[in-house]
Image (tube, rainbow, N blue to C red; front, side):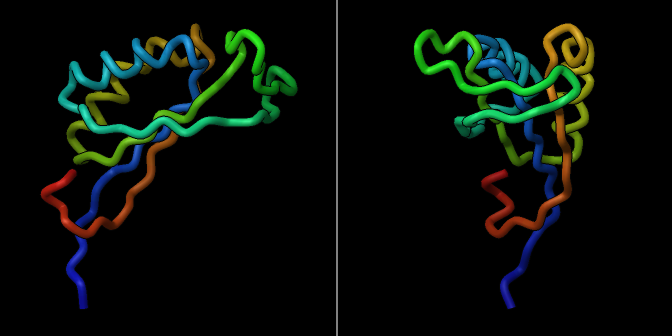
Length: 103
């Protein structure tokens, strides 16, 4: 059987214009590998939203990374002040990875 290692997956729903700030914050705590996933729309406490394909101003993406528990905690701490002010949705889960040295 293939050996797996536990890591943390961090997913952040963020307005597209804020992605550089999130990436810089992540890099500041040592998280340099990530993937951006486009979104189409959704609904939350603030109501429904959808992708604005004309200007991109209301577009949201999911910034996702897999990292160590320590780096995930540092990233969470660094992003906590932005959660309310920037309407971020931050999810953290434990995942099993193959090739742990990649994360």
